[in-house]
Length: 341
Image (cartoon, rainbow, N blue to C red; front, side, top):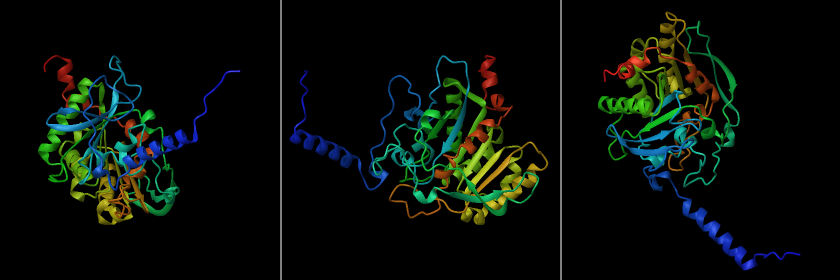
């Protein structure tokens, strides 16, 4: 009979101590205490976000889907994600929202769980019923249940698009998404389109909070670049509606965002869309939303509607269904393919 070694009680206690120490080393009060990720060096990795070398004057992160291959002739849809006011550090950016989902290990220094769960009170998520496209109202004043899972452990493994996450600024100097900054983002997106097989007819612009403000402004200044726009938790003036004619838009926020401007801009967009019936205008008006998961910011109740919508599969099905026939020309790829650039 073979003899197998059995661990002693002492060695078992040592192992438990080592594991407990590893967990305690990872725990912190806020993601602002977590070190910034290293710049990625080596062969390209798919299925997880990577901090890339600076490009177009910007620090940035890149996510490539698991089915991405450099030798492929397939073109992949792109999501451009604009972060919020206090999210410039990658450690903070990656502690919530879409960037946190774009890694197989969704843990943070304040939450050691590999699979990130929203608070159980959001097991049932309700929002106002969307009004039909033929209805000028922003919403119907009735509640509906929405499917927005508490957790999506396989999000990074199944997400079908490329995601670009530029760093617009650091908290010490919150410049916002200025015109000069969005020009840099445009150069960065073009770089990814050329070198990572992006599809210029499917480039979706999304942003949250101050990034939502940036998304509204960027899209209104350069509407022909995008296949769809997805601003989150940031109302916009109705004057922007005329500049966004023909662009599919999904506006997201909670009831307070609606009162402070989302309802009005959605109504203006829907009235405008009646002239071009094929243009989609969607609106998710949550009755309540969580606060950011970082303990330092959890008092911002209802602000993190992005943590509900980004894990809602309806958003991505809609977003990647939209097409921008002018995209190749607007991104300058038509000229590139003919050898003029």
